[in-house]
Image 1 (spheres, rainbow, N blue to C red):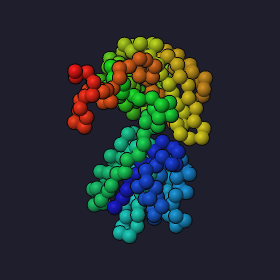
Image 2: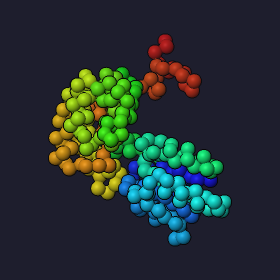
Image 3: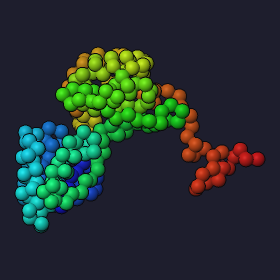
Image 4: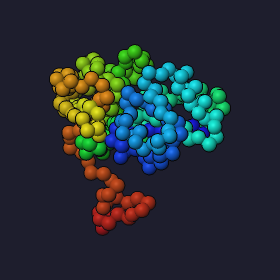
Length: 255
């Protein structure tokens, strides 16, 4: 078995219990060194063979995992930052490892967008405001389908989490406003959420680029925006005493 493990957003305490247990018995570990907090490696035993994948190609990563997993007694872990299902480039690894006959298990992790929302104590789906969260990125060297570019997404007027976009913040802002999003839409950018060096700026969308550049955020930055960040909202039906559901009868309003 090869385990593909989400490390969480940075704080070592935010890895899952299952993830920490896997690291504590890992014989071979390949980790995304450019993003994963190195303190997570402290959970590994002294004998663990550790490889930093930052400078490796896909083929080199697969060869390491393939060779290590030839021994059925070894615990082999591929450690990604955040949640591996988002921008983790794991599908090509999964497909290649399966083609070589390996069994795999993917262990989810806390994504940076969720970590940022937690740090600012903000729900991203508020009744009457937004029931949709858009997770996306701006086009860079990796193309984005035309129907999924910021101009098109802006029409939803939803909640947004943009990964891998801080270096093109001006273009992101321009495209969102061009697509119809209000220039005054509340927005924030957080650098290295949950790390000791965490920093954040917030501003109306139209001013976010200047704030981000002034702060010097270059990478490892999550951008959240949408009306949910600063607006009135409706009370949830879930705990409304006049609302009945499977677990509770309405207690008021039925006279």
